[in-house]
Figure 1 (tube, rainbow, N blue to C red):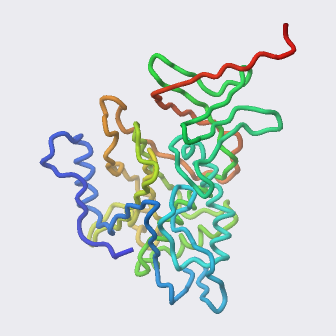
Figure 2 (figure 1 turned 135 degrees about the horizontal axis):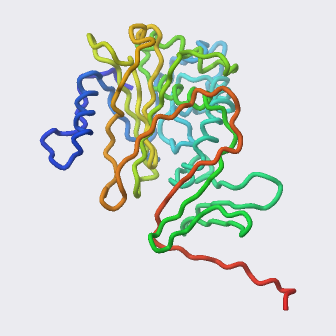
Length: 340
């Protein structure tokens, strides 16, 4: 990824159909941050970060004499739809460690969203189903659309056919919140230019720490924006930002990751560069996102701060989702052949 370069104009102030709050937020980030070249990733692309002929793992520090580099290391987990961006500087041992650990937690946490957004991972769009030994509800995505199964005594959804909306209460697989946070931070450290890595030594150690009770910073907000309406399911967008020289009072670096209907703004902890704001209450506007293609029809973008600092395993967490539909077919259960 190229070095940070000057300004990154997100909106043109002369445009009159843009929410003034978004223009103000864009001006804030343009004033305080420089941006690396944004990445717009599609399945047909194949981009490798680093040098194939100089293998050195940036996470454990081992080179080709002490580690192997045979596997393709995804810079963004494949579960999030990334089939394009890889790195040459992640050894097989670290790739396996992250994949079985924090990236698995991220996959479990994000799975309901990825199913409803039709995000294709290694095995296609993931199916979600009720856990347990007894048959229960499940959602599958097939070429003809979503196939949803539920039982009368175990409802999954509420269908409003008049307004063409479905409301779900979906259950996440087990995850540890801070492991999910580490997985997000790992993405940022993967795409970070090598010249900046000395500012994130503590963060590198933290994401490789299997003991999640060990913290790094006191507060660690993650900002999630939800863009309603039909959004592309095969495009991943990543933007990386670093504080401008001579600017103070804001975190040193963050990145923005967008897939499906969600946009995540993730700050990258640097005790070295952020010492001046340690313990200071910050009030930052969320990074501006374009929003729905038709706000009058689909509504406005919603923004929330997600707390992923919990250090214990979360099981059976339910999350609400609402989505619209064009066509809905209700298959009635077949009559019992033995009944009169």
